[in-house]
Image (cartoon, rainbow over all chains, first blue to last red; front, side, top):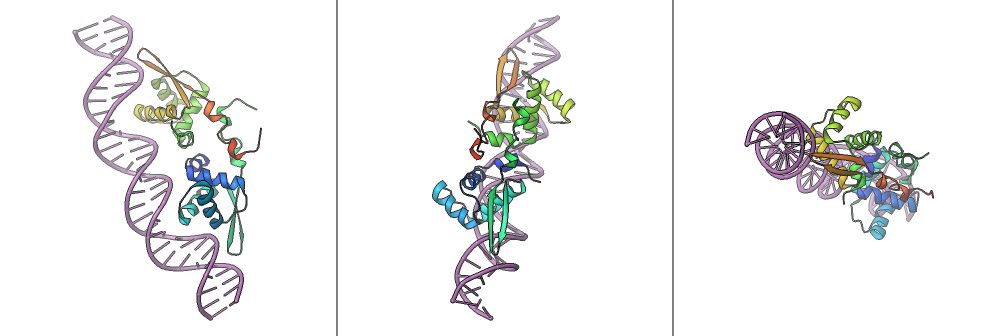
Length: 90
Length: 90
DNA sequence: ATGATAGGCAAGTAGTTACTTGCATGTCAA
DNA sequence: TTGACATGCAAGTAACTACTTGCCTATCAT
């Protein structure tokens, strides 16, 4: 199991989460083009793919295969209470 | 201004925040000994000092000088809403 | 003043991380 | 089956990060 904080440490990965929060169930190519268009990112497909691996290992995204496509969705679970250890809220 | 997520990416820094959440207003030496005692950490003074610099740059701790002492306290402000961009809660 | 204490500065090192590069696998449409 | 498309794998590189090491400054008690 990957480290959620380490996964969030990279700005590109946070932008990927932004994009997936806006639109679920995107393929790698979809993500790449939308990251270029909307977020002014110009990473290669392989770079994005590796970021997705890190995010998946941290449990921050979930994956669904269908034929040659692989759809990625955000999983907000790990985000819910990661900072609660330092906060005094219920 | 430092990156809050990057500051949180290191386990030692998170432990430092744990310790400061438990007891505010600690000097560097106090922190070092308590990290050894309570958290099984054995980092050097310089290592801890550099971690404190990162945490301060990220706004996660605040500092108060008094003579030759420097007191460190946790600042929970930056922690409050860092994940809200991906969550749909009020 | 002198020594002890608390902390600061900075260069160097080992390990990690993001990214690239090139090729391979798997799926589908024609 | 063939070619195009979507993704996977893996070795290499450049930059970064945590940590060390050695010395320096500042404050205080005696």
